[in-house]
Length: 152
Image (tube, rainbow, N blue to C red; front, side):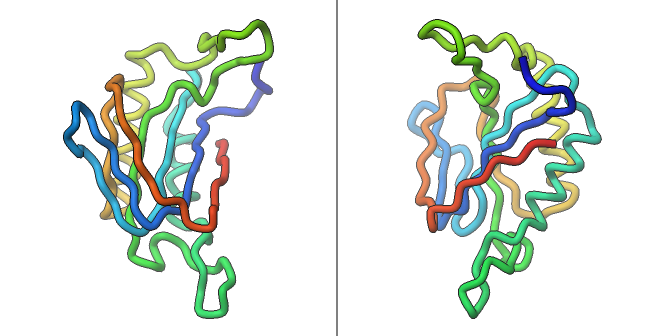
């Protein structure tokens, strides 16, 4: 189904603001920074989490004084908003209803998301999160737009 070696997936968006609400209450909110939708496969591990964490912190997707993408979220003093999203591994090749069988099972994915959040928080001081298995409402203002896909 998925090519071997592809593990954790993150869809990142450069934002001027973003928030996540659960039951009408904001549970995570950032201003300038990166909104990150993250999905996991069962075989994802700490090595994949470390790789994506380093990429997120150091990826140069913010403009410098000359308008070039030369600055990272660390350089600009921005923030990260992490949102768990099992639908990133949906398979839509057959039929009209996506299959989510490739995604990590719920309890595995919960542990993976928590571990990833801990790793990222140990490397970067401004991390907000969504809520695992909650009906979340995600709002954002994408700057650019800049939207990228990272895979470990």
